[in-house]
Amino acid sequence: MNEEPSKSRRIINSAAPVRVCDIGGWTDTWFAEYGAIFNIGVYPFVQAQMFVDDAETKKDRITVFAENYGERFTVDQDKVLAHSKHGLIEAAFSVMDVPQDIAIEVHLYSEAPAGASTGTSAAVSVALIGALDMLTPGRLSPYEAARTAQRIETEVLGLQCGIQDQLCSAYGGVNFIQMSRYPEASVSPIVVPNSIWWELERRLMLVYLGSAHVSSDVHKEVIKNLEASGPEDPRLVGLRAEAHHAKDALLAGDFKALADAMNANTEWQKKLDEGILGQKAQTVIELAQKNGAWGWKLNGAGGEGGSLTLLFGEPSFTKRQFADELSAALPEARIIPVFLSRFGLRVWESQKEGA
Image (cartoon, one colour):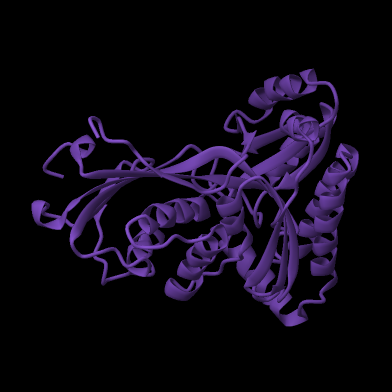
């Protein structure tokens, strides 16, 4: 931009959490037809900040700075490339119908590493849609923002995509999602006393395995098999059941039962394909179990790389013991601090100085 972004006419901010511990994942897809998913929205979150000016004062009408990649690029609202590196970002500007009389520069930043299997791309999409929604009359509900983000991936870009990641980013908190028929779903926030909320937060740990998940070949094989076997495949039935078990466990404040649901879900994931649980993930699970962890859940659809959600037992020091041993056993892995998100998508406008 020709002028400092801070001098722009309007500054719009948005933030959306990422997702961990997606019990029942894979049942939120078109080939599952219907599903049940338990997931947890957490910070670190994705941030979008949008600087808005008059179009006539700017050379490029839409500019994006993807801070994590150190890349700045312009967007042609009328030309969406499905296989573009930033296709998900570019498509949002077209779908959200950005007014022609304004110029915008959007900065996007994620505190979670790319490819961590925590629904980061969905959070980017939801945060960007929320910010762009401020440019036109009316406001999207959380459900509408999530559906718009999911529709961009599936209908505009033609990608394989479930529905749970976008819903978790839009709603935040802990949710039980029932998909009646793809892609329609109802979202039930799981409301618990603060003591249970704080205890869950204390026990949780997110471990990034040190590399982005590489899973395309595995996923193609899983989709092929599940498409052929249909929605009543025993593995899908088992995954749906564990989502119900996780919901019931947390509402009861029963962390051992929640851990059991996490572990059972991971076993069902392993039955989908032998490549779902990589060697690094197996190493982390064995080390965590040795150090007092009760539960472990491979985040996302699985494959090499990505991340794991761990649920530890009562003593807090066992988490620190695990962290010390992890750095020696798997130096490339790292622990990402997480906090349960009280909110989902948040959008607000900065107050201009002197306004």
